[in-house]
View (tube, one colour):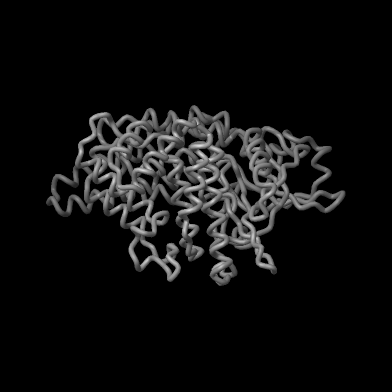
Length: 475
């Protein structure tokens, strides 16, 4: 279960409770879920036929506008139904939204992206039997569990709890019944539905993407592995006061239940955080950035879900603020060769070295062997733009403060990079990125957004140099 949906970004628990109605019953049987999706598919087919007929009588300009509306409507219907079905089919829709920018119309991408932040909780009567089956009635009597969830996700939901013997505050994550067993059926049905909706280009093969979605779903349903990652991050960060990682309580955890200590904190977007002095916001920003650099370059172990709900801020009266790290279900292990080749692209971008960038891009499967020189140079230029926060000497002067630190809050870097990619038609020379890139860049984008939200002003040259030197030491 992803904390992207578990701890709502910028929303208090009371606001979450008030904002979300509950689902009283889940469609968990394969036949029942397939019928719901088949009904949606038939509706899509009828709309497609009507849309195609109507287009015969439209001019070229109005036809384009009609196509835009049609794609948006189709994607909205799909998103609404997936949100109701929950489980792996909704999570698959979320995963598709990550890849969608590479093969779906922009209007459909925008709608599917709403799945990242929209999930109704399920009534306690639905999840309580799952919890009792996993832990047993005797163990459950040791806990007082709030029946109203503090947050809901596509694969499960989280409830506050208190251990009766000592008052220890806990969070209990409960996987929705039937989620894991429905994955294969949901994936097959959803792939047919996407094809029927005609949102993808003709002859576009979604098989590899759905294979990746299936693997991710299995990973995020594996609470035993998530427990191991939580404990691993806790060990690695135990001596760094800037971070807090929940402690797992194994006696209240099982294959479909994960219980950890409740770790207090507020959203990165909270007004208390935004009004902190610059130095404290910079310290939090540096903690965000250095954590990512350590995860990828040093540990090769990356929590790839960047949603703000995964990161809370615990304010300290003495200024020793901490990042609270939540949910490690989306953790990925990166191979040494991939990290090394990715570092080649990074070094090449920093030095404006197109051949070095080309070697790295080819090695990680981002580009083919016969890379057009013009496309390679355009790609190198774009990479150089992407790394401008790590290269203040080449950053726009208006984005640097008096000390030469990069002003993330004033930067529109994502928009400028998107414009460069569109202008140079880079997609014509590149493949759909390998899954390692998609999820790594999802997290990297999240880091940038966090630093921009904090209004951090940082010189990241030394942290990056330390990270790159860690690769050299490993080899």
